[in-house]
Structure formats: C-alpha cells, structure tokens
Image 1 (cartoon, rainbow over the protein chains, first blue to last red):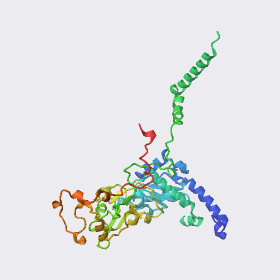
Image 2 (cartoon, each protein chain N blue to C red):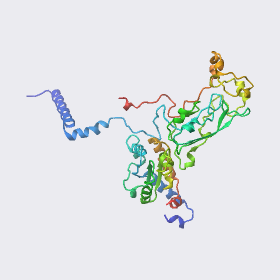
Image 3 (cartoon, each protein chain N blue to C red):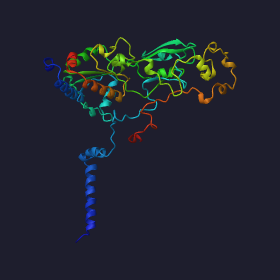
Length: 162
Length: 245
C-alpha cells in the first residue's frame, strides 16, 4: 500500500480503505491454535449451533500462512510462548490476535511461574475476551467487535502495526 | 384382463412407496442419504446470536452487580470477604467508615472503592457465596470484551446497580435514615447507637415480637436481585423445542 504516501489526503483512499477493510473483516480466517479448555468453546463456536460460518470465518486454517486471525484460546505456558510467537510471525500481514479467556489475557487464576501472565507479553493483542472459558456467545461478541475495529482501521495504522 | 383404473393407480403408488422404502432403509446408499433428508425437515439448530441471543440459564454467572436496598443505600459493607474468597485475586475493596453526614450503607463501613478485574475474574461465583449481605450478585450480562486490558477493570460506578424508584442516591445522612425508620438486618445492631442517639439493645434481650416492630413489610429493604437484562425480561426462560427429550 504505497499509494497513500504519495497522495495528499484523498476521497479515493478513504473509499478504498473502507472496501478493503470490509473484505478483510468479513472473511477473517482463524488459525487453528487451541491451547487449553478455551479451545473446546472455540470449537463449539465453529460448530453448527453457533456457526462462525455466518461471519465468513468457518475455516480454521492448519497453516498459519493462510490465517488472518490468531485466537489464543487458553493459558500460554512459558514453554509455549516462543512457539506462539513463531506462529504469529509466520502469519501473513495483515493479521490480528484475539486473546480468548482470562488465562490468555492475564494469566487468570494461574498466577505462577509456569504461565505467561498475559499473551500481550509475546504478541500484540487486538481484542480481549474475558471469561473462564468464555461461552461461545462471548467469543462471538469479541469477534464481532474485532470486525468493527478492523472496519475502522486505516492503512497507515495497519502498516505501523506490521 | 382389464384392471379398473383406480386399482392400477393404487398399485402403482404402493409399488413406488415400497421401492422408496427399500431404497432408503435397505441399501447402504439410501441409509446414508436418509440422514440429510430427514434433517432437512427439522428446525434449524443454529442460534442467530447477535440479532436474537438465546436466553441463558436462570442462574448463569455473568458480570457482577453491587446491589442496593429499596431506599438506595448500598448493601456492600466493605468487609472484603469477596476479595478473600476470590481464587484469582480479581477483587479489590477499599472500605471506609460511614459518618453521620455521609452514610452509604447500613452499619459501620461501606466500600469506598470496589474494583473487579475481569482480566482475572473467572466468574466462578465464590464471591457471591462469601458475601454476607447479598450485596454482590451476578447478572446475565456477558458481552464485555474490550480491546484494552484497562477497559476490563470495572470500578464501583460501573458495577453498582441503579437507584431503585423511590430511593435516593448515596450518601444519605443519618437523619434521613432515622426518619425513614428503616431497621436493617432484622433489628440487630445496625448502626452504632451513638450515631442515632438511640439505645443499643443486645440481640439476646430483643423481644419476641421484634420482627413485627422492625419495619412495616411494605418498607422492608428489598433487594434488587432480579437481573434487569433483555435476555430474561419478558417471560420465563424459553426451552429449546428440540431439546425436550
């Protein structure tokens, strides 16, 4: 996206941004990355009852290269942190991270030496979903708020993040 | 031999129906396809979440709420039992003394600051069990994801319930409380008697008719425990028609 650096602030780019952000937010493919019990709720969210496919994100990609969104579902142990960071690095830009559940958000009730006290020590997080584990509706709520956030992003912000 | 046309039609139908039945129930292919065929006529299981959220269970553990009495006084007495019970250390309570001029709760103390950190809270409900005055209960609200961790630390003004109709916003003065004549906690020692200028009557010496003398029932402090929540308002919890087996 080198265009906007050469142009003055224009109507053209605002509309392009809107369109691109719309397409990005409506087909957000998550990476398969369940770490603990939250992953069970994440799978339920993909299952027919809650049906994430309604929001264009039913395909949990097994390869991080094909994924836009990393749902960190569960506690991140110190041993898992470098792996998590590597998977994040392997995802292609633009990419987003959703921290699902209190363990991923802050370590939750596990305030001990084995766990990373918040996944934002390792990767930048765009949305925090509380709960232990969050019920599928809570995850969907976080995802929908993330969609909204993506739709209001600018290219410059996105590039600064990458 | 010429058969009557009615018989021919009936026979054709019977033979066709038999063929379909044999195909669907006696062949591997038909048995397999009969499952999606059957399910095409069942009600859809998918919940249309953001538009039509399904009601949660009546005792669902959602976001907390700090309750008030009917007159607007806060139920929380700042005892910190919830913070002690919390397995995740998610609750912070800072108590302070009620004064004659500024009374927030019945009794000596109230919660000056009350914070629940939803980055840590696992919504287990142990704080609710620990609360001696039912000041802390849980609502059915669960949509509180945020894009910053600081937004998930809820302070007292976010947690406290609204003032019930007819009540006043805290702080009250002791004079107001006395004029109202409310006697909390079943007439046991409520506020330090010196504050009211009254006499302290020990619980053991209380007359048997204490319950009657406490407060007229209409004015009894009632709790605001019914969660006001769109998921529950409007009738009892709807049961899933497909689940009534």
